[in-house]
Amino acid sequence: MIELDALAEAECQVWWAGPDPDLHGLLDLLDDGEKARFDRFRRDEDRFRYLVGHAMVRLVLASHTGRDPRDLRFATDCLHCGGPHGKPRLDPPAGLDFSLTHSGERVGLAVVRDVPVGLDVEAHARNVEQSLVDHVLSDAERRVFDTVPTEARATAFFTYWTRKEAVLKATGHGLAAGVATVEVSGPDEPARLVRWTAKQALDSPVRLYDLHPGPGHSASVALLTSRQHRVLERDAEPLLKQAL
Image (cartoon, rainbow, N blue to C red; front, side, top):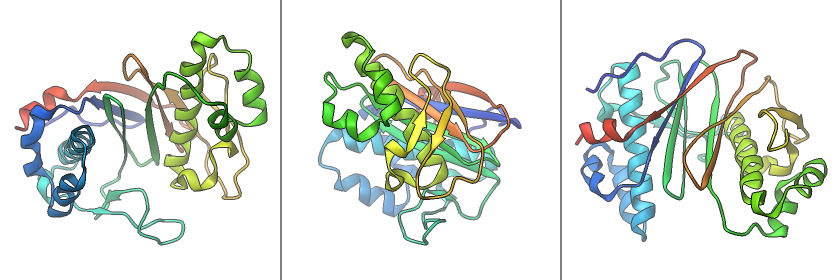
């Protein structure tokens, strides 16, 4: 088992990697269901985003729990409605929460102790359609967005998007709550939740942090807590290659 630095109290680790085909050997870490899902992807980039993400989950959580990565099991029943589409979590629990995300050339994993977490990364589209802006942003956010120079609009939009999605992932509601019901601060301001207008209740304060996934991508992580956390971003490539 690979040993990582211990996950401290009030610390959130965010691990980043790319969908590298040379990491195919990590398939041995996955269970039968994950391997079957890997085989069903038609595009190589989707296959390797999936493989890298799920291998990263197993390796990082194994180190923090002292378990073998192949022995980890996950529950996916929704904590809100009981359906089979819930946010994955360790089963049995181990006092850890995690969130997995991928887009473009980045795969990310956030891990924290005793606090619900949501992580989102998005690759920047060349052009952001107005219909998408209208769907994602609240009226107040659109007024701010309309003042953004053309050359900065993609970065600004995906800053909004990842902040909102991170909050929705942390709560476990996902997109069903409606992206525009999560209102966040402007793209040039420190990340914070401004207003929650979804019909689903939000029973916790939210800490929101912008991240640095690399050029052409935006990312944010949300923690359901009032406590300030230290967010550490780390390169997962050495960890993944060591596991081959």
